[in-house]
Image (cartoon, rainbow, N blue to C red; front, side):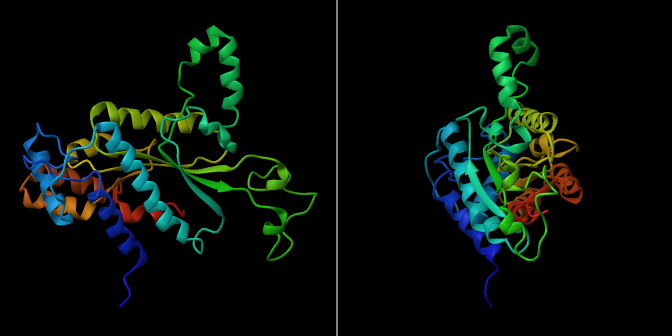
Length: 285
């Protein structure tokens, strides 16, 4: 029987991580564990053993994060981009990182931020009032490119010059591409990092004009309590996706950490924490 495409892509995703950021040091501590937390180390060890991690040197924090972003973008390219039968369109997956704090203004929902940036540049009072609340730098994004009238009208005449003259998806209306999703990649979660993800999500919500993009977080954090700091609650982030949720649950069960298992089950049952393999299908919504 042929293996499902996403199942194979998940294996390849983990293989890419094992070749780069997910290793175990000479002291037996996995690279996604907090060495000062015995439970974090134990759970991370269980995940690493299931994924067959090998011994290796820990990458610098910035390098780990950057590599994780890259591998997440590749996973989505290998999966979401193959789901055109579920979500037709012209798509592009792009890694942004911190290279351009105004990159978000290239999209239809946020193009007005250019005018805001320009006004703040020449008005110190406005700049002080705004702060940096309008600057957003997602790690990985999914872009939906606009459709020509020929593409829209391909099955039958859908539009002409008299209608739909402000529709965002229509290329002839002269708009910008649409931001379909913002994917924040967090190799691990600390209190400052979780708040950073929430702030970014709230900025995406508050500053948009039009359709809100998907806003998700992908992480390799092993501690359920730290996952809860970003996963629990609603209103900002759609959902948190764990790089190896099945292995995480098995490892927490093996650690006999009842409180941690209860917290993990609350997040999973409450649909606030899912596996990386769920992300491509959720992005078709």
